[in-house]
Amino acid sequence: ETGVTQTPRHLVMGMTNKKSLKCEQHLGHNAMYWYKQSAKKPLELMFVYSLEERVENNSVPSRFSPECPNSSHLFLHLHTLQPEDSALYLCASRSRGGELFFGEGSRLTVL
Amino acid sequence: EDQVTQSPEALRLQEGESSSLNCSYTVSGLRGLFWYRQDPGKGPEFLFTLYSAGEEKEKERLKATLTKKESFLHITAPKPEDSATYLCAPRTGGFKTIFGAGTRLFVKA
Image (cartoon, rainbow over all chains, first blue to last red; front, side):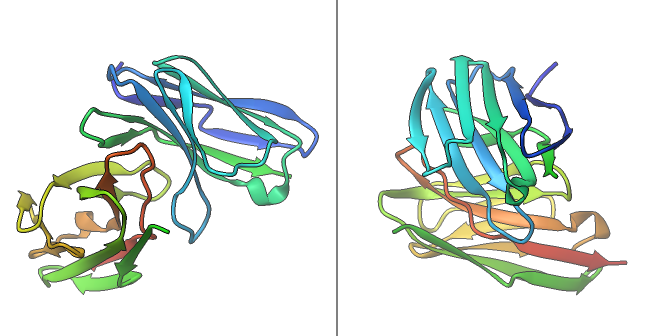
């Protein structure tokens, strides 16, 4: 398998649930990203990890908790979300030249 | 604060009708620009990196150009399969990659 894989592709959760999004990259890159994409809005940068250290945290609410156990895996832990958190969550890995390679995204619906 | 503006927001073309998309930006530490294509419900797909003003890159019916303050994505004789949202993102020396809101392109057969 190649590229960037995100699971699950679709997730429906209640406001009191706890769930996690997973991202795995097979490109040998050292940096990974989480973006949020809401309808008719630009991609919003959430977090960036480089060599398993968080290097960007774009004022994201604490109900989103990232985890990067190694350079190939990235998680986004979700708890007590709000309906306005419903969006497409995109993971990307970054090449040395700065190009981003995205997964297909996880479509999250918060009821 | 870094800003990226894309225009138009949406563009409707007939098949074969050439046009251009614009990306303008105010960014500190600029080292070039990226273009991406995004199909509905999918992640963006990398198209081009432009490193300096005056540079051009081509891929099939797409040609990207770069000046000091803006970039253009020219689409020559588009086909319906070129319909997508096209995103630009300035290239800087840091990890923070900011995208424009995109141009939604519709090409009708």
